Image (tube, rainbow, N blue to C red):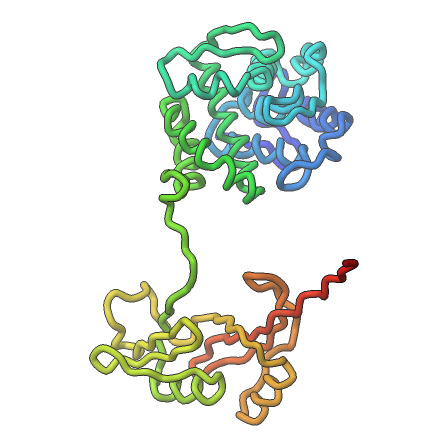
Length: 340
């Protein structure tokens, strides 16, 4: 049965670097400040544990999981913050084993500007050690372990930083595509899931710029039209072969009669299953007064929320089918003082 490294630093294997040693590894990482070093997604220690668990999820052995847990202790070409010096290799090897420590050193010493492009070319891959400047050729198992750790590390970093994902996602997609022969099937599947959106070059990727329309499946179209016109100020229109819709701003809501939905449609079109947030410039006090006049009960609000473009204030109600409607106003931006 495959074991994973739990959040409290349990053991994934046996022998040296096993059950008695994993808490010691966690203690060492904390003693060297990993739990106080900032890193995308929290602290460096958080990141190291997530990488080890990800490698465990991919079915790697205990040596590779241990190397994942400690992969940044000597610093890396992308994270120049060493917790230990390379003169302390024997100490780490005593805790996680010679094989795992050797993988940590291989990963830490990689000169990425030289090695990563070579991963896209012929095999075997010649490494350059950034600590010594020397070149060497890792064994095939070591090379595969290196790429597996690289994938786990980068996927975790990008999962916790949208800025880094946008900056490095395309290059990492190319890297792992070119080195997919060195990745396990679970690791490659994870790369495809997380980095697939970067398969096209910048400028050619699909970029969504707005919402044109959505579809509501309703029990009674005319009752819905009356509510959205009377309460929310939308305008009803008829198009196509007698189809009904509600327009507002630059968008619209198309209406489907439950049981007579037009194809194609959602897998499970159901009245009352939608949650809409609608934006208005009308002050919330006026919104409340209007809803009272219309006899529409308020579920909650006004309450602070976060919209697509910043802080909003929202009031909640339900339409005739039970859909949740959020009427929101963007909070005024603070005045900018000028000394000119």
